[in-house]
Image (cartoon, rainbow over all chains, first blue to last red; front, side, top):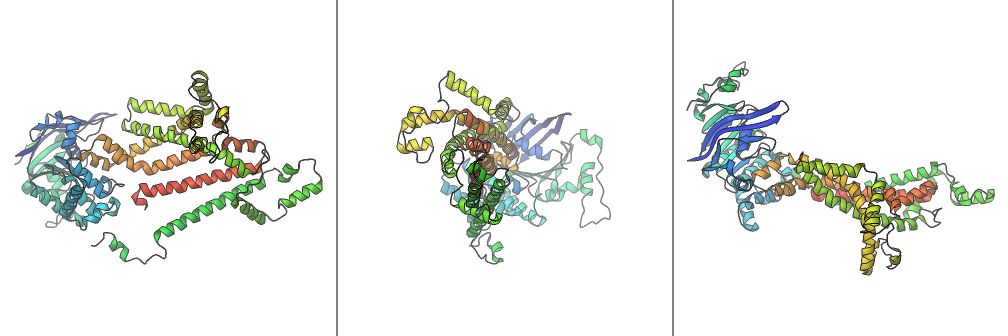
Length: 283
Length: 353
């Protein structure tokens, strides 16, 4: 079942040197699967995630033939209707919990707000729901966490709270925008497996945005590789290492590997014609 | 149940004092030090001024014996340190000496003029806050649009127009032509002395006495100068609010709030605004302190018997006791407002605890 269809998506920013296109006409579909979007900084992967939720602020412009969620074209919705989609149907986890949680509100207040925004419920049962959710992301002593402030939490705890907060209204799609880049390597995996489990149990669609090829290959079903605002290659995660596009090959070769140690890692060589290359299907 | 912070606390030695006592002691200590510094400065100013305090009292034609007697009486023959301690002792007992101009104790004079300024400044800062904060927020939210431009021009005018000109034009228009407000002074002459002076603030005294006629008369006299001062502090408050808000609105937690599906109003007031309260407290406390210092020009134009014109008059006629007394009071206000804003910090920012 297709949850999300994106067709010919462009994100543009007017600058002094003219219009800059961060995303240049990309199209993809998302089902109840885990889709990875990989690319370097500035390749437009975050912009893609944010434009689905229509969170690109002015003067940025989003244009697409369609961005439809379960058959509804999100581009036709009013801001009010869009608000009932955000959080409720499509949600997003951001990079660094140190900045993405409000520092002067208790964690409980922020969780309850996320839940009560889309559910008519009294505070008591909302609180119960939040505590259940904190348990689900394996936080110890959720009662105490509810009354704590974000600065009292570690990065890993913060990101688990973020995941709990974004999943509590029970959305169909989760966009995870570099959810582990700000975390210690030791807790990255732990946080990812918690997210992975919740997403699978609930039959959700996941868009996992990352620059880490190995993580994406491990936690996703399908991978899109973006370069300069375009999708240059799309393949199954299990077949990522057989990818053909020179950019993907370059990214793979630039990674150190334990099973194949080398004295020199290759430096990524970029070619101008990749900017205009059509999508190469390898599925 | 294992508490989240217990692991970090276990390894530490227990503090000799409970934390609240320690912070209170620290605050008291810093207040005392600041006050001592302030008094030392005023004392030194009083001693280095090229004004002979004895001559000021006895007059130029007094005999040498009279001069010496007063010199001795004032303790000027004692060492400077001893003099300072005398000064301290007097100030602690609320004795700033007598004013040359009014021939009354300075403390009594201040008790008369300060409430007048306080009444004016309080209403002024309330007006500045009630209008300035929403204007600043609006300006930040609609950054770069005509709303932002209009507000910025309005506040710039408030900042750059000389207040005496605005005051005179205001009097001309609203009192002279339209007759909407009362003229200069705190009350019309028929209302003066009708209510007993308890706090020295006309509005409060009128309310305490339950006399609404006096209250409204006082209010109509107060509203124009207070609006002027309000306009002036509004300019500062809204400009600062705008820049604080702009900083917060670009923060990542604002995106989180939008992802949750909150309305812009919830995002702005429920999330961003909560984060600028601490900074706003400082700005408002500063504005308030500035107004409490007394705005001489406004007080003169509106014949307002406040502390600003009192200190200025005293300074111009070399009435040092009155000047120093006034300075100590103004300094005290700053210290008190600082303590108050520190307290508010702890309420508004959980990280300050």
